[in-house]
Amino acid sequence: MCDILRRTVLINKSRRENDAEHSWHIAVMAQLFLEYTTESIDIGRVVRMLVIHDLIEIYAGDTFAYDVKGNEDKKSREIAAADKIFAILPEDQGAEIRLLWEEFDDMKTSDAKYAACMDRIQPFLNNTLTNGHTWMEGKTKRWQVEERMSVVKKMMPEVYEWVEENIQNAVNNKWISE
Image (cartoon, rainbow, N blue to C red; front, side):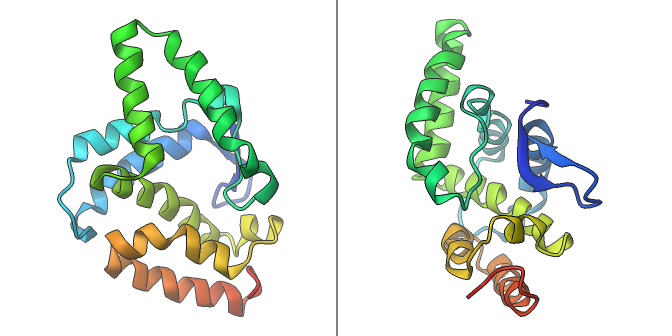
């Protein structure tokens, strides 16, 4: 996962973040942000989800969240990658980890939604600290950010207030467009 580079740059802008760094970062964040969620969460399960959620990118590659074209075939690429990567493991472990990955991807349980919040807050925070670097690179629009952060609005309303302020700040600074 260290070789899978994301579009997000480090805060010092020296290089792009890799999947291993991202996964570790959000696993730590999940423990720190727990008090802000409105739902009951199994933090151990969430941390497990976050540690494995991007394993499939070893074969599928990272898809930029706001890349409309890249997201068209993302699901099929990721399913093919999941078939390949989880088959490497003993059958019981592969099945268990695949179920966790699918739960994360489906975003139907409270644990999966909370995990998704972390997966969205981390790059959002990074963009606020790098003057919108990745947003500007991807020509991101306000509605795209709001749509992506909608799970945070539902699960973590207090945190979403901060998100809203920073979306407006991003628009004001022309990091994202209306």
